[in-house]
Image (cartoon, rainbow, N blue to C red; front, top):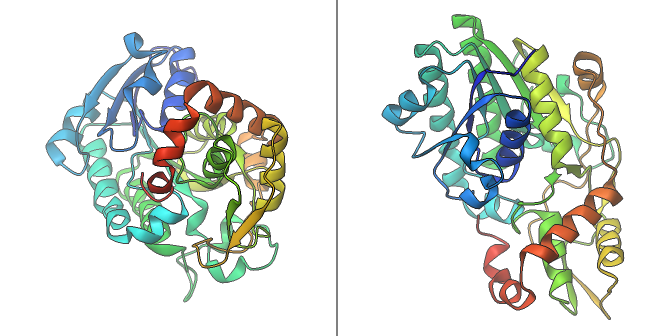
Length: 338
C-alpha cells in the first residue's frame, strides 16, 4: 500500500503510541488528521509534524465530533481510549468501561462517512487471565466467541478492548469495511507516562528512590516492546489485513521486572542500597508474552529493537525531558493517574 496522499485519521494521535504512528505516516506521505481530547496526550508530542497535520480536539464519544473527524477519510487508526497502566485500570474501571461507547461511535461514524478501512489498537489484556500464571505464549486463537468460556479478559479494560475487537469484526461483516486488529503487548518508549511499568521504574531510578520500590516480588514477566515496533505492526496490519483478523505485537522474550530494573540501573549507571518489594500493590497476571507466529506469517512483522536498546533510548529521552526534582514531587500521583 502506498501511503502517499492517503487521507488518514489517527484517533488518540497525540498520545504515546499515537504520536509515533502519526510521525511514521507523515514520513510516508500520508495526509494525517489527529483527533484527541488531550486527556493523556499532548500537542508537544506532535511538535515535529505539527505543521504537516490537522488537529481536532474533542470527545469521540460525541457523535457529532466523530462525524466531523471521519469526513473524507480513507483509513482510520483507532487508538483513542481511556487507559493507563496497572494502577490506573485497577483504580478506574468505570472510566475504562466508557471505551465501549467510544469504539462504537467511531465505527458508526466511519461507516456512515465511507471510510475504507479501520485498524484497531487492542491489548494483550483481552487474553484469559487464568492461563497467564505460567509461561505460556499467548496465541490469538486463545480468545474466541464460538464456544462457552472462550473469553476471560483482564479487568474491565480488557473486556472493553475485547468488545472493541468483536464490534469491529461485526462492522466488517455487515458493512464490508476493511478491518484489522493489533493486540499490543506492553509497549514502552519515549512519551509514555509513569502509570506504565517501564516508565514508572525509570522515574523511580531517575529520582534515586532508595529504598527502591517494586510492585510485587519482581518475578512477574512481560514482553516489553519498543514503541517503534508497535507502530510498524499497526501500519502493516492496515496494509495487509482486511477481514478483522487480530494479530499480536510483542517481542519473543519474557522479561521479568527484576531484569527490567537491573537494565534501567545499568542505563543510568546507578543502583539503590535497598530494594523494597510491595506485595500489596496491583501487578496483574504473573506472566504474559505473545506468540507472534501469525504476525510474522501475515505481515512479515518482527521487532527490530532489542529490550536493552529500547531501555537505553527511553532512559536517554527521559533524562533529557524531565527535571529530577519535578519528577520526584509528582511521582506518587503519576503512578496511578493518566
